[in-house]
Image (cartoon, rainbow, N blue to C red; front, side, top):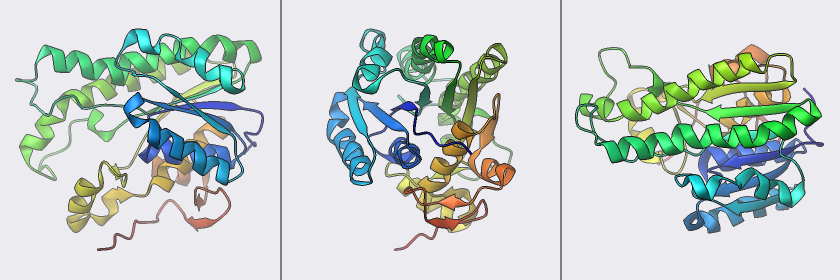
Length: 278
């Protein structure tokens, strides 16, 4: 796969977790990276940039509240001011505004969830597309979730938990559909769009408690952040488009080794499981 040394990436929700891991993995392949999150996550953004710079990469951060249309209206322009036009966009940021079943979740929570999980990615894509079109190359990666699909019965956990994630899953399902439609529209332009999800759950800081609980009965459901970051790199560096796919499937499809976030150290493959300690 091609080096990313001539490309500039914007990664949202990159103060920790999947966003930070993806930013580091892209930087390890030569991409210059701009990371973003809300002002309350500024310290995390600074840490992400510091990690990238310590590893020999270039990084900057911009603050933006993706829940606010006005605050995100010029986000790609502000990100491009650091190093140049954005030609890799990773829409990772997402929110769950309320854990409530579909029969009870109120309008404010529904609107807030779709604002961050669907409308913000679409706005950023539309902001980034002119520069991508101008250079005839671009990569758009939307981070999605298996909750976009209703899980089979019997449920793996309490039914009330499954029901409470319905609206979050609906926002991700909408993002998936937008991604495939966008990829079809952009066919032949050199701009590719894909959606990527963990197989079940990625072991991030925010999901550690849930991941540990799942791993007791289903150790294969939990994957490392490196798995998601590696799959993100494969989709961005490769020639794939129009996919809504799981991380392990990407590595298997490409026969890609699983690397540490330094991009050099091989730590496994698509079959590798997380070893939880403690």
